[in-house]
Amino acid sequence: MRKKIVAGNWKMNNDEIESQRLINSIIEKKLDNNCEVYVSPSFPFLKDAIKLCDKTNIKVLAQNVSHEIEGAFTGDVSCKMLDSLEVKSVIIGHSERRTIFKEDNNMLLNKLKLCFKNNFQVFFCIGEDIDARKSEEQFFVIEDQLNKTVFQLENIDPNKLIIAYEPVWAIGTGLSATPNQAQEMHKFIREKFKNKFSESISEKLSIIYGGSVKPSSAKEIFAQNDVDGGLIGGASLKSNDFADIVNSI
Ligand code: 13P
Image 1: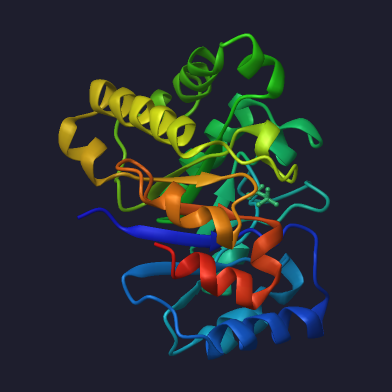
Image 2: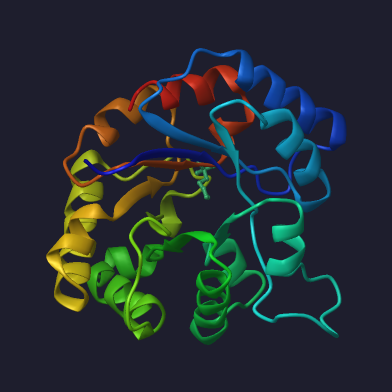
């Protein structure tokens, strides 16, 4: 059985008090025990989050990590720093990092290598933009993103890697991929992992969907064979919506 995962990507939202309130409110909800649940406050509030989530089933996820070990990288946060807070899960390759902050495949590959060396769990995001989807090049784009990053690695541990398929055109637009579109792409991704690594790895790999998942759409998307959960943006900022999405798994 593959792990079922629902993670909230809070992005640059919530100050200290708001972050604490949201976590406390999520802790109070009755959440499906079969689902791994993650929250991701911004860096300054990770320590609070770790404390609040201690002795609960909720895990804490960082939204980013540096591609370098340490040194003159103003504003960056390293694996070692996260480790010292006991944060061992990170998001890498989010389309906002790729487009706004110009993180390229080389940098993402460095991040992947550092994270795995430091025994982190990585949520690795891939996804095509609207032009690629319109010109039906989505499979080519996804394969290219994988070839230049994860598939540069000799091996992967499916317990340490989660692939988040997030079509860029679905992020924050209210226009989710249809369950069929998600399933078709997740199946394609799993097939690529099978060809690159092994069937056993591909069968253990959790592939989650992100992009305008709402309580009303989660159930049908999560019901697809190759969809193992979701990476949730806007709807993860409201505890009721987030809990409903978790319980749609
Ligand atoms: P939305 O759920 O707000 O579309 O964001 C998805 C996302 O970017 C998760 O990483």
